[in-house]
Length: 435
Image (cartoon, rainbow, N blue to C red; front, side):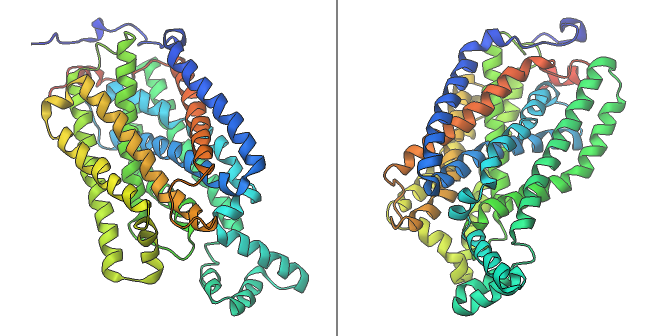
């Protein structure tokens, strides 16, 4: 039987991370970010039309991981979870990277980046130009444009929501809401490190129960604004849940890798055990199945309804080389993780979990790529080819820039607070959890 951990066994004030001990990985992220930024800057000024898709892809990958971390701290608090106390602070730190992601997302506000990505914005700007000359409103000018081009009638009907001013307001609102949630919960958690008062736990639980609804709206509408409107005529009632499933899945994989790395440096060894790996592995398995269920449901509903505006999404991704990417996602995103994570003992073995989590993050990146990049092909008259000359290099540079930059800032900031809530009354329950 393992030794029962008490507060006397833990260092006073918790464990503080020393960045010097993790300098190799931190330096690696910094180097990746620097190389990515240099390459991205070159393509931004030379091939803005194609680079826009690369940047959206990279930013949204980072965004989903951070949003997933925000979900986990809300869920841990709202459900009054005891086992997750040992890793909650790491999720809090990861969720607070939302402002860093927001900084990287600022290029998405540049019209030269927006117009190639969101065709509807280009039409709206054209309508605004006509409206300025004729004295009409933008909607009236757009209506006149729709008389000449029947495809634009959809934009007229959606103008109440899908307009450039509203899009920009919502853009900042998404980051503000997520930052408010993440910063407030971490602030309360850090305050408890000082006084150990249970009132912070109760307050955080009430706060999380209230904010879960607003979190759900934020994650859903961000995915709609940034990804679904890449094709303004397409729609799916499952889209927000589909993206959310990937958020939770990928962020849990990041957490397992982070915990393993910290334990290899000598941290968390008394508060994180094989039981935590087992519990995190079960959540990974749960969201593997949940993602597959939502993905199938979305496909089935669109296939059954057979509406032209809906089916284009899958027709594009089931043509030429994208067909093989779709099959690869089916096997790699669901079948592989499902089989491996079924076994209880594998979930307690660090090597298996590290390998599995690296694969999960790779598949998450492929999934986001599959959702965004096919929209770039037709605009370049490359049909449905997934490997477009020179464009894939931009994707790599963008991913290095954003992931490297966010990873560097995140790891450098780990030493600011204790790696776990050192005076949470339920910390000992978490450290000795058995499931």
